Image (tube, rainbow, N blue to C red; front, side, top):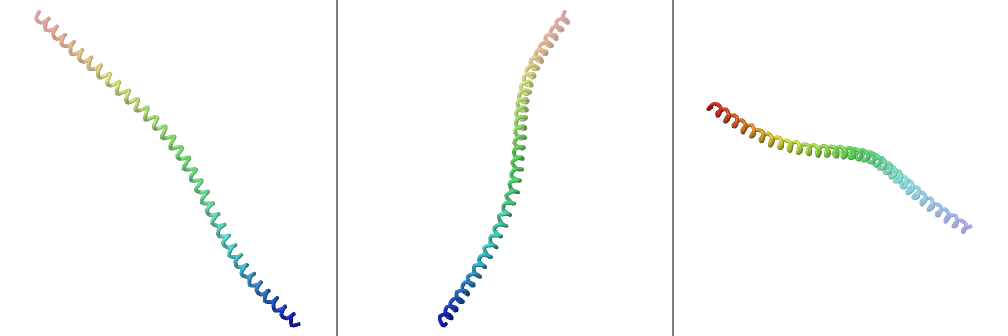
Length: 123
């Protein structure tokens, strides 16, 4: 019977140790679950922010595409305008040269006419 009591005491001690380990493990599981929930919340938050950033990125890319198109259109118009200005300046120079020649011919003709009128007056 003495052995039985020793065995019973030993089993009670083992049971108490197992309960103690069980409590420690339950606390560790609860801590792990709490940490897991916290990490899950953080991941959800990050995914939400990532989705928002992706939407903003898409908007910025669309805006960039639109601005690039507008820039290219404006650049093309500026090149055409520059060409037109160059052409108009050349036309202006040609007209000025033509005007100067015609003005000189006019002056020469006027001088000849004055000279002819003087000659007629002398007759």
